[in-house]
Length: 323
Picture 1 (tube, rainbow, N blue to C red):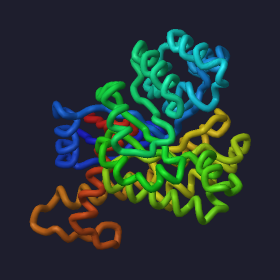
Picture 2 (picture 1 turned 45 degrees about the horizontal axis):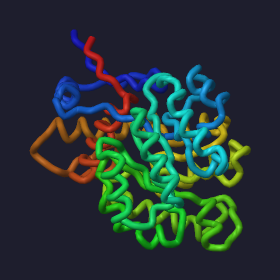
Picture 3 (picture 1 turned 180 degrees about the horizontal axis):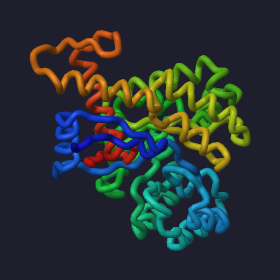
């Protein structure tokens, strides 16, 4: 007898499926529009002028979902060209990871040189720091190339006020908004502390989250204020993920990656709930009201579960098995 299941790669766990649900999900995966996605739970900054960091990435020693090859804040002024020249030395991807590059936005000459330099390498995405204008972001996207994905960091008061217009020029299910707590602290004139301790930073997180969700954008939380403390990073990640719905977090210390990845990964119980909802709705087309696990589920719940299971298939968390 044929058995249909869905394997959760992260925990080597299998969920049994009805043939109806299996065929539904198989049809989605076999569709010509199906496109694999990066997980995007964790992005690690890598200074481009530091050879030893490049070597660690190339040797697959760092479990990040993505690497932000940095030309901006981590690079001293006198090392900018050294960093640009080092783009040619970036190692091949160690698996299915996202290669991102952060460019300089403050100085027109640096920006010009950066755009020229990054054109020589097939980066998957580009981080545009200190985004403060939708028109400027649109101009940069056109100049660099619309085939790239873009992450725009909100880290100034002007950027916060222009967030809606910035989000409008970004592309749903491709681009992202990020939060830069360090520069935002400086711009506001307050001490840089953990987002878990600051109602002000939490208000900013909430506004970024609502704006990003409105336009279908991924959301990256800021580097932790205590970047040498994995526990602090974990609690910040739990706040941004569980309370505000962020999809990932940036960091500069590889020791924080394990806890960040864990926080932003789906759980077995979460996938079980989504599958139960999916099975219930796909099993009957006579009603849009179902009781699943003792809870009432309407059509919005089905759409949400359908969207999440398909997303986890695209991101490689789940794979279909017919045995």
